[in-house]
Length: 350
Length: 256
Ligand code: FES
Image (cartoon, rainbow over all chains, first blue to last red; front, side, top):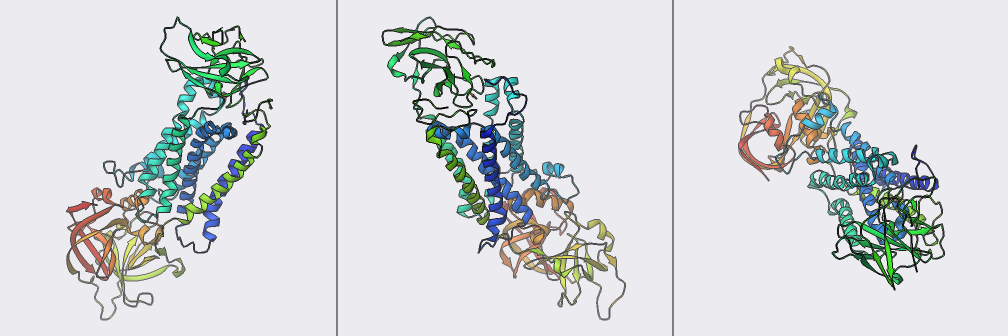
């Protein structure tokens, strides 16, 4: 589906998603700058411009942490999938909040001097050869540069332009950005000797959660698909991939081939078809999707493909690779050589 | 999108209805997310450490002081007793923003001058942000020397503490110390704002002192690498008026 990408096509869930996100950001900033200072016992005399810097910086940090939790959370519990959809909007908003943080920094720490703020940013601190006092701003700049590239290339036009695998690889650099942010915080805010344990945990707990969730999700078997690691075979042979009874109707089983490519074997109305596990949109895991209206439907953004030829139903034009299947008794066998995308393969009947 | 066996929440974004099991889950997540962000915002604000009490004394308005000006290591003035400073006071001088006043006072060292500006105060540290170029004052008051007070040596000290820019530390920025503020402090020092040493242990009641190199002159750019980190350094301390000057010995410097 989706041969159109002229503009962002808005629909209700995108609007709801973005509204919730905007409210969350607003809640954080208001909580930090307005609510907290009005609490009894709030003694901090930190200057407003510095509070602003901290509020937007912390907010961007929290957003990036949450953003990175969405993927593994959706893998562990499919009810989080609605958050995955439109995750790009989350990323773009994170970039905007980070930009606000950066501009407040430039307007305060690097303002009021004879040097241009951008020049000051690069020359004021050149202690690159020491741990303490290292110009930690540089990590923030690098992280922001990555977020900016990702935000700019988040549109489907770039997805098409780069091809999904390249785009996906590019967007994996969000992890690099997060690592840089963590280092930025570690060498900056975390170096405050007066920092309380609670304040420290604000910066240490989210990255820990991100890491743990990723580890747990990586070892988790999705309930709707089953993964089989195919043993070494020559390209000539048919791989046994299990019994026909292993696969529920409308669902798939994922087979990982020796070259690490993945095949999703779907059962649809009593027939079996094999297609690549990688969605042509953003490499979403098709094998974790369903058959909806007779089409393999990606769990990430709902692109659809016919199971027998891997083509998106008209008017859409996406195609994915198909594989040959055969049945001997109860057992299914897969030919591990991929067909060119869009090749028709007669489904195996039960 | 509802399949007959669709009971574990399969969601496809372009289809605008949520599967049965997610009907309450997603709004709940949304509400939790907004509340969670609000609480995190409040939490992150509440746990900030106290930046200290330094501040501009804007309420005092523009003040005028007269006294003998010294140029080295950094511009300072020995303000004569006045209504504001009944005992007299030694004030560090800085310009607007992250600028020093070296150029403006270069020809006035050792002379009695009139200066006006805004006061910054933190503990025993006082700074005057000079608004107009200091002018020589030739009216010699009776029984008053026009010499700067003689420096009094307090001996050699080994101190632990942090180099900061005197202006932000005195209250132009709160907090005006720490690593997050290092680049900013460096910019101040590059601009000519007097640096101070914030000692972990007070010297004759002073926690802060103006710094100089071992010859009593302004610090070289090398020292910028030591700003905002905890250091241990040895040097002679002398009292000029009521301001201490710590002449740091670069060879004795140790990072902690
Ligand atoms: S990855 Fe987006 S629809 Fe499949």
